[in-house]
Image 1 (tube, rainbow over the protein chains, first blue to last red):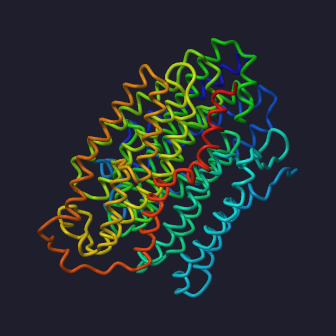
Image 2: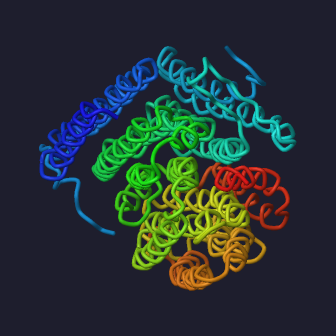
Image 3: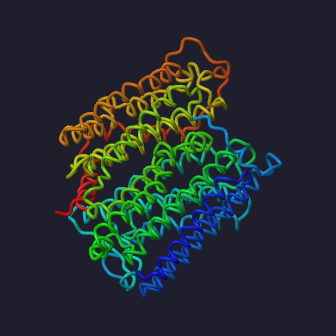
Length: 102
Length: 507
C-alpha cells in the first residue's frame, strides 16, 4: 500500500468517526440521520480509494453504487418513520424515543 | 453467464420478490376491497417457494450445491445446505405468519403493504443464506432489516409502535453501517469480498498485518451484525420492537430474523477464522453468549407484559444459540460439529416454539385487547386450544422432554461436554439459566391456564377465528414433531452443520 492510500484510509476513518460523534452527541433525530449518512460516506470513500489503488475499479464501482442505493432506501424509510414521530409528538427529539425499560 | 442448476437458486428468491410486487400492485391497482385478498396471494407465493426449496433437498443432501454466477469476481449465489436450512425455516414461518395475519389484520386497511414487506423480509432471510460474498450478504441483510422497520411500526396511528420502530431503525442502521465499514477494511487488503476468496487473498499479506485486519474487520462486523442478533449490550431495541409489532410480525422477527442476523455474523467470521490463530472467536462469542442468556432471563423475570416477556426470552434463547455456535467454532483450538448441529436445531425449533408462543399471545391480545399478564387470568379456559398450545410452546422453550427445545439443548450440552475444559463451565451456566427461565415461564402458564379467579376482561372475550387457531395448532404440532422425530429436522440441519464446520475447519 502506498502512502497516498494510507492518507485516504485515514481520511475515511476520520469521516466515519465524525459521523459517529454526530450520531452520539446530537439530540435531534434529523441530525442523527445526517450523522449516519456521514458515516456511510466515509466508508464509500474507503471503497473507492481501495478500488483505485488495487486496479480493481470495476468491482469497487459496483459495490459503491449498490451501497449508495441501500443507503438511500434506508434513510428514506427512517425519515418516513421520523415524520410519524413528529405527527405524534410535535417534535423530533431523540429523548422522545428513548426510555430504557430493559 | 449462468451455470449450474440455476433454477433452484433463482426461483425461490424470485418467487418471494415477485410475490411482494404482485401482492402490492394487486392491492393498489384493483378496487379498494381487493386489498383483503393480498394475504392469500402472499401465502400462495410463500407456499410455492417452500415447494421449490423442498424439491431441492435430495440434491443438496447428496452434496450437490446448485449455484448461479455472473462474470468471475461478480455476483455468486448458491443454494448451499445453510441457505436451504435458512430458506426452509424462514419460509415455513412465513406461511404460518401470512395465514395468521389474514384474520388478525382483517380490520386494517393497506394490508397490501404489509404482505409485500413481509415477503421482502423473507427474501432477505433467504438471500443471507444464498449470498456467497460478504457484500451481497450485506445487501440482503439490509433488505431484511429495511423491510422490518415499517412492519414494526405498522400501526402508525398509535404512539408505541412508532416509537419502537424508529428506535429499532436507528440502532439497526448504525449497526449495519458499522458492519459495512468492517467489509470495506477487508476489501482494502483482500481486494475481494468472496467468502472463499478472502483467505487466499490475505495469505500474501504479512501475518502481523493480517492479525490486526482480522481484529478490526471482525470486530466491526461482529458489532454491526450483532445489533440484529441482539447480543447483549446491543439488545436494547428488541423488547420494544418485538412486543409492539403486529403478532404475525413478532413471530417472524423473533422466530427467524434475529437468527438470520446471527447467521450473517457467523458467515462474516467464516473467512476470517483460520487467518489469525491467536484470536479465538469461539471464546469471545461464548463470553458474550453467557452475558446474553443471563441478562435476557433476568429482564424477562420482571415483565408483566406477555409479549414483552416472550421478547426478552428471545434474547436468552439467542444466548443459547450463540453458545452452541461458540462450541462449534471451538473455545480453544478445534471445535466440534455437534455445536453447529445444536445451534441450528435450536434455531429450527425456535422458529416454531417462539413463533407459536407469539401467535398465542397475539390471539389473547385479539380476544381481550390487552397484553398485560395480570388481566389474562383464566383465559386458557375460555380459549382451550390456544391455551394448551401456549403451554406446549412455553414448555418447549424451556426444554421439556417431548418437545423440540429438549433435543437441541441436549445437543448443545453434548457439544460442550465433548469440548471439555472451560466449555463444561458454560454448559453449567446454560443449565442454570434454563432453571432460571422457569421463574417466568411457569407463572405465565399458571396465570393463563390454572388461575382460579377470572380477569375482568376474560368474561367477555371476542372469539378467535378458526384460521388463527389452526395456524397456532400447526406451529405447536411442529414443535412436537421436531421433538419426537428429530431425524426429520436433522435431515436439513446435519448437512448445514457439516457445511459450517467445513468452512471453519477445512481439514
